Image (cartoon, rainbow, N blue to C red):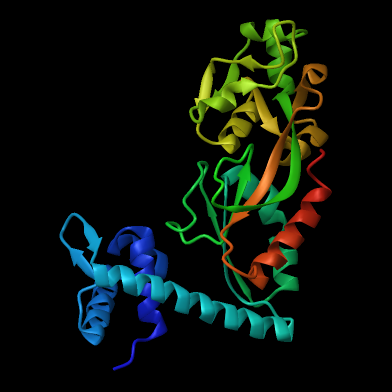
Length: 299
């Protein structure tokens, strides 16, 4: 019996995700179906690829050898499919995008309809995580990352940068007063992040330097939650323009200490693994979203 491509894909997904259960979630299968596929693959090959217990899995020497070959075969198959699509100028296939929930909601979702109209054969899968993910583990094609990059193993493409603003609702400022100096912020309710703590260092120019480390009065793990708290008159937050430009334009949020924040920006990158020619579906998305963001990031 010949080994089939879905068996190779199941095997590599189990290794990348770290468990049969996680692989089943990624593949849309049951854990028992994944286990049966692995057993069938080992039977065909006449060797054990994985030593499995209830707590862990470990590749055998034969499994490691087979994994390298399986990855190469799957990459060649994907490249062939992409080349055929390129010849027809019809990019297709599943495209898995990951981004922090505020960026996904405010900078990607509004453009999904236009993207799908341009590329109807690309199947979008949009996932959100407010912390950086492992692209292989989460089976992700492209991740959007806000701020300075640190992972040098990934290829990155700049999508621009977004301004940062201190913002509060008109009702909050009417009730508590508008701070006239950076030092006056100490008397206000400040909205910050639970993690990473680096996001609680605000890029404010003042007599003591070019930044201010705050201790949040109220904190949350997501920028979207902080936006909602600011809209609910709970305090002052430091938020990106891509997620708040409509609120500012509508008067729902007001800029605080704009002179001290002038010029403060966050870089935005798309990161991805690239072993050879960049997949056409990824290239199409990057070109599309970069063009769309160019008109909104300076708000």
